[in-house]
Amino acid sequence: MKKLVTTLVCFVFIIALIAFLNFHTPSSEGFAPELIGQMTAEPLDEVSGMVKSRSYANTFWVVNDSGAEARIFAINREGINILPTYSRFSYYGEVEEEGKKQWPGFNVLYTENVDWESMSADDNFIYVADTGNNFNNRQDLGIYMLSEIDPTASTQSAAIKHLPVRYPQQTEFPGMGKRHFDSEALFHADGSLYLITKNRSFSGAFEAGANLYRLDTEFTDEDNLLNLIDSHEQMMTVTGAELSPNGQTLAVITYDALWLFDRPAEGDAWLSSTFKRHALDTDVVRQMETVVWDDDSTLLLTNEERDLFRVNLADLPQSSQ
Image 1 (cartoon, rainbow, N blue to C red):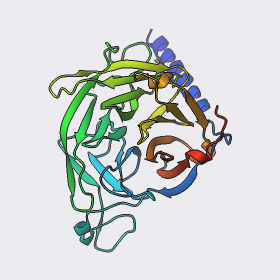
Image 2 (image 1 turned 135 degrees about the vertical axis):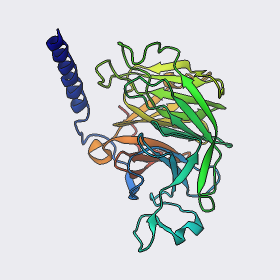
Image 3 (image 1 turned 60 degrees about the vertical axis):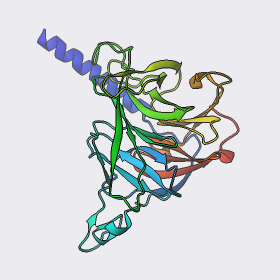
């Protein structure tokens, strides 16, 4: 019996590996965005979330993926660190300086980076989604609310609130069925926060389909049940999302494509709205991780390799896939 179980586990692993490798086969077909910079500072080793500052020009906040310290970083459009002015006596950003340490980022008090995967913002707060859940076994998912700091004057940030979240549809951890409770995409729209899932089968292989959830409560002492709003059957490996400043277009990034959804005629079923899917040249972009609106006609994208790309909507192909 033990031998049979071992064989079955190996078989499931091989199937998942084959699916993963097939999905990541590079393709030169698709749109190639403009490379405008790269984050080279060593502490920024695996950027998973990014959001544009609402208060400071040419400033973007980024976070690292799971396993990193609970820190945020401020960068400009070229990926260069923005440091507190007076810290430059002791720290350097990208280029090593004798007698100085490399800037480690802004410590975020009262938080823990279990698996930070996305960021968003409104006029009052920055939101950090601790919602990475690759194995669908977490029961401590949550969203942190931070007040934005001045990156040239402060050395640390702090969580104002922590909002525990839970998917009502998940009753087993990890469960024996499909794994549809991992999210790497958080966005803010019309006063509410939304999450889009990155779905896997039981074997761990990515599968088509994404679900849209809305956060309707802000409890800090009990779970906030996420409200299932919408779904999309074809969307796969969603890693980021953000609504345009004018509120008319939802941009969603996956490993290999940029999706642009029009505002729904009514309600918030964003994934059922009219959309265009623009395949990306994966030889150029590799694995995409974040999408941010710089203005209503310009997007910034980052990949796992910390490259920064710019997409002007006017340059996108007229046809979509």
